Image 1 (cartoon, rainbow, N blue to C red):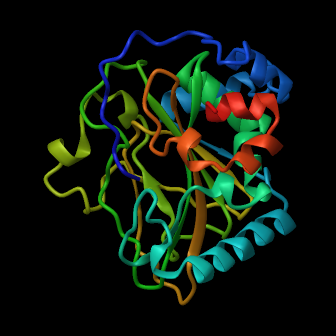
Image 2 (cartoon, rainbow, N blue to C red; image 1 turned 90 degrees about the vertical axis):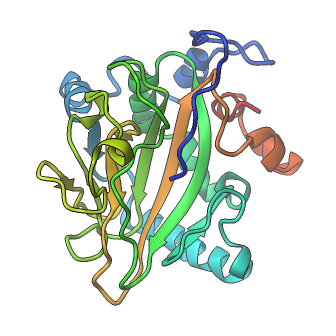
Length: 273
């Protein structure tokens, strides 16, 4: 994930209204989010560790369908795949997925995921980008990084991500690693680690079944590991930011009028379109 710099904007707009007069909180309510959508144990786990696995948010059929669509888009887009945001050697990358198939809209509509974003980012947030990443055989290793340049005060979070597992994530196929609690360390791995690509003594490998969604506070140190299998390892990244920050991909510019016309008012608020 490309890092995002802090912008000198007004203070975080709590519950800011969009052009239709709907607040983020009202949009969340319409999309089925309530105070107890996340349990207190889930909130505490996310607060402490900086990540939270949510099993079974996609059925096997849904995950397989999205993975098949992923491959179709890679084939159609060819060398241009992912160029809207980021291309990475050793991977298949896709970007602007909200505009490319309605099946991807679950990533801006699932109550459990939106509740987690609200918990981390507060009352006013939006999608920053929805991208795809598939680590190819023998590839995919990333250094530990955070998706934010600079240091933050503990609790003052700007970005939060969700990884939608379209493959099983295993020890051998390039599962993401995280360093629990690093979101509140006040440190930046690319500045403070001698070798961000090396194993970290506290790292945890996020192994889970396809259909799981892993929420992680994007200030938590993380990175893909090496895919040692003969098959790509697939995931989607639903990346969110506070509403007073720039999106990684400007949804107003990237989405077609046809797509925007099919979205609900609540979904448009989440996308800030």
